Image (cartoon, rainbow, N blue to C red; front, side):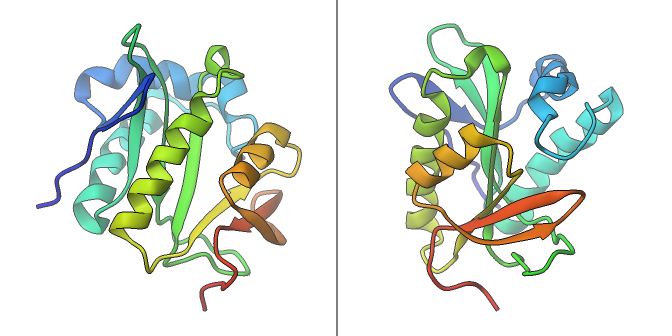
Length: 177
């Protein structure tokens, strides 16, 4: 069985999802500002429940997944970030890569939390899955996420349509077949 890591940074705790996160998780995913560039409407309570359970499934079956981002000082759940395999039907394919994703509550934006969390996660992934390329898909109007991806070493490799236009980025020069 896979042990889901807890990663600590100077200001954040990146930890597994817990069942008692559910009400905060529902509030996060129900916020229209949180999902604005993710290509979906705010999530219902039921959809968020399935998402919470899916988080554990990724770790169990793939050895990677998303972690809750918790502010250490306040203990507040402020977002989540990590890696997943969604098997998206897009061209070019990003299957068999560590698709990197993140989201933070709007009141946590502009504090450097996303860079802090993602830097730690990328470092973790490079040590655990050195052979796997990291990819991300980002809405072309999501300037802050595109800027963050660039700071993390992601470069644009393609643009395509997946429920609207998206930018595909990769941290490697070689794209998966």
